[in-house]
Length: 399
Image (tube, rainbow, N blue to C red; front, side, top):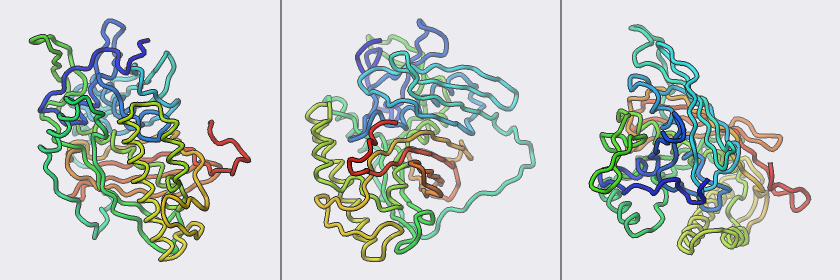
């Protein structure tokens, strides 16, 4: 396999495509075999992470599967397993298997592979639109009340800035943005009762012609691709991408565990990072920002009580006292899509995350996602390895 980040030279970014559409675009490899795809562009490796951003594998597997089902079917559930850390420096091949095609439901499995080995696998189920009948059973969990509204922003300006970064050859960064709202209840509540709120949305404006999986054509010497998907599928892929944001990290936040707030940890991570100088600077800035946010949350907890964890002092990233995360890795990820055509991923969505259980070196988190109008559009679950730093007495670097 090629040792480049993509198998085929990335096509030019189109001005009417949002950042997340560009990031998630796939190319069919018809010369290799049917229902095989590859990433059209390099994938994001978050600063300090073991591999590519997990949401990219989730979303691109969904995009690949969507290309094999009629537009009248929408995804209603996907069950995923993270097998190995993805390497952002080499291409990914997505193999789709057509398990079942029924009148009301369609099933697909997708396996993401690098160097011939599976790094991610998922089973996805699609339901035909309006197949539930004229009369249905309906109820939904209500959106939390009194949540501060997200900031307004110029989507067109965000899109122009993104294209400018690409044209200058800079790293694209995250194709979505998030605003942390806070943790409730505050004070001396147990970890399993705490809920973390944040607003998320895809940057820019998702085009009316979704660009996920296309037929390749040569036009005026440049690559162009005609969509085979309806627009709502692009929003579903974008939602899947964003659903992994800060997800397993919920465990460390409700427990008030140290994850970033250590100058030594940041310097070691930056030193060991294998990337360009620009990426190194971006990584350091991101980790320091995370450390400031973590220290602020710990100061608030100290002022209001233990916060469900161990009371500790902290005056910023340099202190690094108390229980520290030694390893945190996602194991699996499940998404249930409730109203697949009732939202736009490029408009603010409210997420509420909590952790009902942690033990035996693992943690479980759950997430609910609403539109600003209060429509519940998805419920997600994730389990991951959550190991404390054992102070050198036990290795925590491998699973």
